[in-house]
Image (cartoon, rainbow, N blue to C red):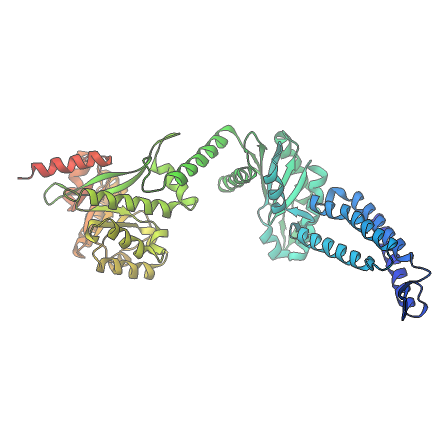
Length: 541
């Protein structure tokens, strides 16, 4: 125990021992007070001892608070600094009015206040390392961002070490590692599970790699078990605030992304942000903001394009696939290849799917004279949502269209999530008139047995098969056999991605029922697609 702590605890123990002795002795001596049948409460000869004891306790406590100011939160510091003020006010009333018994009350209330403050602060302390938690830093930095360098240090194999050497030993090692941080790294440290956040003076990014590596130097091959050496495996990243991140949440997101990238690419232990990374991050944040704003049925920037599908029966466009687009935004047109993964990773894909579906239903409703059906992509999240059936048929009813106007496209990934739930859900849709396409067959993990167990009407063969058919004779035979097998099971075949005359000839020769691709039409804006359908309708005798 620290020398000051021993003195502090010794003084407090002595104070409380003296006070306890006086209280017990008062039962027989009346040194502090007595109750007279006539006069009532009467102060004793040692009546000021309680005030002196309280004063000593206050002084000792304030000295300790001032000495350890740097490890106390502002909230704790404020509570302890107000402690002598409150005590002085109460003691003043007590001294000048002997009928006010407030000393004990003031002490009790003050102790309760301090106890609650301490318990509140304990939530924000990681006692295994002795550090404040990252939640504490989040609260402080969110209130006021100051220029600084933020670093994240991730212990990559903490679980492995705990399994091999036990939590107690590893906790001690982490505690010593934190001491090494403080010796080598300039800054304040916070912990969140297996990650540490370091707040350093602004502009230290260039030297942090050396400092972080130095902190771990003594922990390389420091443990051994069954002839195998173990070390702390770590990744770290740094970012400057506010140049590269204007909010604390953005800074942490950048740091996590940098660490994740380093983990995937198995790069060096310490990575730093750069202009390209920061620009990509800012663009992603801008796209998220646009999606949150524009994902509504009335949006003009979120649009639905339609790629026509041609039937081999009459060589006419019979359906179209609805495709999402973000057009004319403040950062220009954004491709679905960019914004759809961002929507998926930020919890917006289900909302995107709903808005897409509602726009399609409205489009069909307004143009039912030429639009017979549209295929709409449904994500895993939508299909596994128990409210999907109510949403689909509620929207169909809202716009006064028929279930037969809707083709639901689902990808192979759905088939491996919860097969039985999906199968039952699909059967309910089919009973009410909905048609299902299996999208992008050949890119996932489904097998023929699972596919034919589900009520699909059409299988969409992925473009990758078309390219392989074009280059490899054996693959051409394989695809032809696959198509034949599906058709024997009463399934229609649609091939997507046909762009050349040669590809068109190959897929037609393979016996497909529908073709979708740039050779026939690119995805079209709503009005252009309607013009195409009306022109086609006018040409039919």
